[in-house]
Image (cartoon, rainbow over all chains, first blue to last red; front, side, top):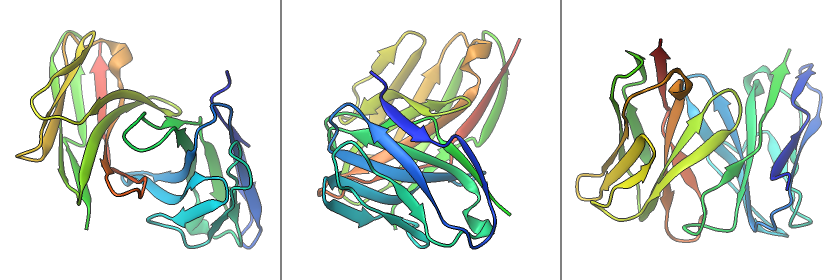
Length: 113
Length: 112
């Protein structure tokens, strides 16, 4: 049972480039989310999904796009990378609110030059 | 605006000490409060608290919630160097929004 798998683990981009951070879970969880973690800021919610075909914005959605075509996968797209998006990105999943805590992937460390 | 505040932001203790980490919150439609431990990678779940006054315990760690005063504490007794980590508090809201609001974390360092 792999849990929540994020790829890549590290990435360096140039300003203006686009890329997709991958997240997959094999626990049949309905709820998935993306957070970014910056020093001194805690985790902040970017986008989330309560099931396949349904996504919504979190606290800091600008510059990011998501889709949820399957229950297992929830990719995060950076449309035009900016230095302010340098961060550690975590994907999380759970069965649902109040039922089970969210399980986190190991994170993707992203640097934008 | 929803807010979760943790204190202290950092703490350095010696092995064997007992520590208390604090988390206060102002959140609309509170459902539950969660504690996570984050070492080098992913946050790992410790406790989920939904009812006031009921202590949750796991080994040397325990936590309790006060819904009247809007805070929770996480206690660690007989600390070990392996307890060194960032401890995150998060609050879950009702209403189907499926959102966790995180505090900034407390960085605990346990020296031998």
